[in-house]
Image 1 (cartoon, rainbow over the protein chains, first blue to last red):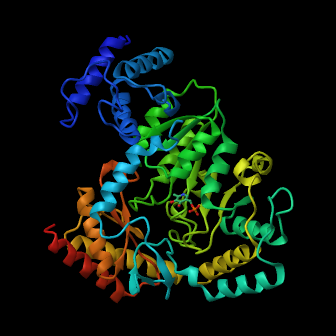
Image 2 (cartoon, rainbow over the protein chains, first blue to last red):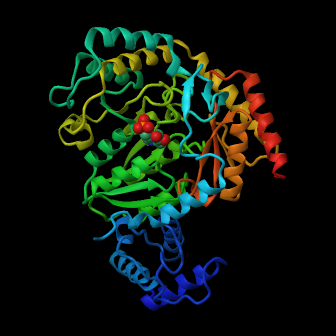
Image 3 (tube, rainbow over the protein chains, first blue to last red):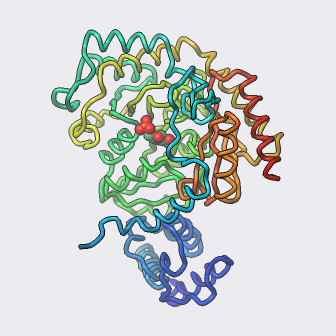
Length: 84
Length: 397
Ligand SMILES: Cc1ncc(COP(=O)(O)O)c(C=O)c1O
């Protein structure tokens, strides 16, 4: 059973909010670099934590196209489906 | 007109903030000249060098200096060309044969820098249909080689065999070749990789393994063949990459392997082909330094003793260092301001170390990266530890 994009997006937001430095008002449309002030390394490290949650690996080139939390959720979902 | 530098605005801001508070620009330290392997003149003062990669002190090797001078006099100072055109002298071949023999491997390719050795090896071995599994804390040259290759890049958690295995398991149906890349000693933290465990994993999953022993060549192992020699797993490492710019004190890089396929790498590795080969005097000095290293195994013993002395001293002074005892000892601090002030105070008190700032450091904290040499005397190490302790107390750390 693969989680939906919405489920994954909610899980990402929950994970992000566990970090006190992240703004409280984020949603699926929040931009990861601009709104969350993540640098490229922080993005890669955060993605690593999410990968463990849903048991996929995201190739780095995929990260280049990701702007928002929903983009990330969509990417993880697609990878999970491809892997299943 | 679009400002071509606009993209650097963030960098500019960080740079300005850093240089505004620091009495000197940490990126513009000038070593006016080395006095010996362990002492250099900085700002007109004799300063203890604890931030080089000159682990065995061989940048000042008499034998290497003489070899360079003699070779420059007889062969000139440059080759003016690519290894695959006019840039291969007899000396290049000779150095490749020496290194292959040293590592007990069939093949060796010499590159113009260690950076290019990583770019040239990785980009020739994998392409867009393949998978690269990189330790998350890999050196920039490994990430850049990955980019140049076009392969799909998957990071695994630093030094974590369980995480690597999990990721390989997810790829079990992937049709491409899989290449795992790890370093022997990590340059920023001094952490040592569990290469033996990676060998075990790559064997079970049908992957290849490349080890960058840039900081461990000449430093670790009874013969100086690196972490793989210490861990007894050399046979399981498909490609060993490294540099001459650290333990051998010169410049240049290499890749050694038993795979015969590497021969064609000379004709498809762009960072190998499209650049001038190393000048003859550098090759001669490198060969002499390699001989020096082989003739003086006691340098390695001294280095390990010095590493242990610095590590223990800094820990006793209450500073936060890594767990591994290796010639790189990193002191972790919490904030950039703290690190910048600490680093300046060390330099003002005659000790030069490297200031390493995020994002070039793991886990976003600044480091004071210290490195020891075989050439340091116990007194020099104790002096550095004393200065560290005094500065830490001064800042209330
Ligand atoms: C792990 C690692 N690999 C490769 C390199 C590149 O070597 P070089 O500086 O000789 O080009 C370095 C050092 O800069 C390094 O730390």
